[in-house]
Amino acid sequence: MIPLAVPNIAGNEAAYLQDCVDSTFVSTVGPYVTKFEQEVASAAGTKYAVATSSGTTALHMGLLAMGVGRDDVVILPSMTFIASANAISHCGASPWLIDVDQWSWTLCPQVLLAELSQKAEIRSNGVFLKACGRQVKAILPVFNLGMAADMDALRVVAEKWKLPLIVDAAAALGAEYKGKKSGACGALASMYSFNGNKTVTAGGGGILATDDEPLANMVRHLSTTARSGPDYDHDLVGYNHRMTNLQAAVGCAQMEQLAAFLQRKRQIRAFYDLAFAQTGLQAFPVPDWTHSADWYSGFLYPYTDVEGFRARLREKGVDARPFWKPVHLQKPYQNAVRSDMLVCDQLWDRIITLPCSTNITDSDLEQVVAVVLEAL
Ligand SMILES: *Cc1c(COP(=O)(O)O)cnc(C)c1O
Image 1 (cartoon, rainbow, N blue to C red):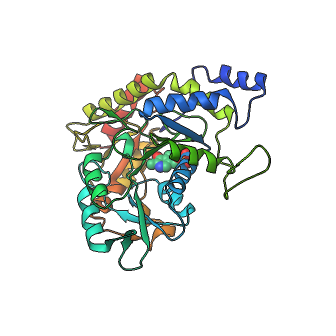
Image 2 (image 1 turned 120 degrees about the vertical axis):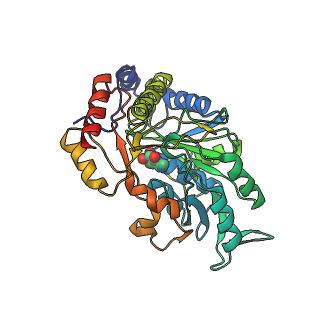
Image 3 (image 1 turned 30 degrees about the vertical axis):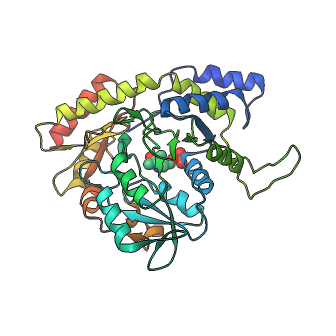
C-alpha cells in the first residue's frame, strides 16, 4: 500500500536524540525545546512560541490563557478535526459551530456575521448568546488542509463583535495569507501541531505562537503546573503539558527540512491537480488570498458511490481515505449550537485524500494517478 502520510525521518533526528541521551536532558527542560520554540516562532512569523505536548493541549492552554472558562462559548467551523472542539470542551466551554464557504472550505465570514447578528448580543460586559445567556469568548478559524482562512474578512466581523481570534493552524506551518506568515495575519494566537501525520513532526507536540508576551507567559505557566516559586508553590490549577526535549530534538531536525518538505508537498499537489484536471474530479480549493502549505492532497469526488470508489483505490494499493467528519455530526457535539451546514454537509463525505508523504517517490505518484484514472 502506498501510505497516505508517513513521517519523513531522514535528517538529524537520530543524532539529536542521541545528544539528548548523552546529555541526560530527556525531559521537559532542555536546549532543544527552546530552539524548537524559536524556530517555529520564526516560521510562524510571531515573537513568541510555547511548546506543549500536542496541538490539542496548545489550543487548550491558549484558550484558557485568553480567559475561556466554564460555560463560555467559542465559535469555530464544523469542518475541522474534532480536536479543535475538544480543546474548547476541555476548558469547560462549548463550541458554536459555523459552516464553511465553498471557495475555501474554511470558516465563512458571511455565515459567521449572520449567526452572530441572529443569536448573540453585545452587552456592557461582553458578547452573549441570547437564548442561553452564555458568554461568547473567542472565534477560532481553522486553516483547513494547509490553507489560510480569509483572515481580513473574519477580522472585520471579530472587531465588530469585539471577539479575539485564535487560529487552529495545526497543519499550516509554512502557509501564507496575503504574503504574511500564518501566525501573523491578524489573530491573537495560532496553534501548530507536530503529530506524526503533519508536514513537520516531533513524534507528537504542539506550539502556541503569539506576539502577545503576557499570553505566551500564561501558556507557559499553565502548561508547567503553574509553579510560582522555586519550591512547591503553585498559584493556579495548572497542567503538565510541556513538550519534552526528546520531542523537540526530533522537531528541530525536522525544521531544518521545512523548506524542502513544503516544496515537496506543493509539488505533489500540483502533480495531482494537473493529472486530474480533465477528469471531472474536482481539485481542492485554491483561494486567492492564501499560499497553501498543501498539507494534504486529493480531490472532491463528484459522483455518489464515493465509498466504492475509495475501496477500489485501496484494493489497488493506494491508501485513499475520507477526510474529517464534521464536528456537528460527532456524537459529543450533536446538540451544539450551530448554523445551517449547507456547504459542509454536501462536501465532507465526497473528499478523498491521496498519498502525499514528503518522501513519496515520483513513480509512486505516477502509480497513484494511474490507479485513480483506471478506477474512474
Ligand atoms: C492535527 C490537528 C489537530 C490536533 O493536533 P494534535 O497534535 O494531534 O493534538 C487539531 N486541529 C487540526 C485542524 C489538526 O489537523
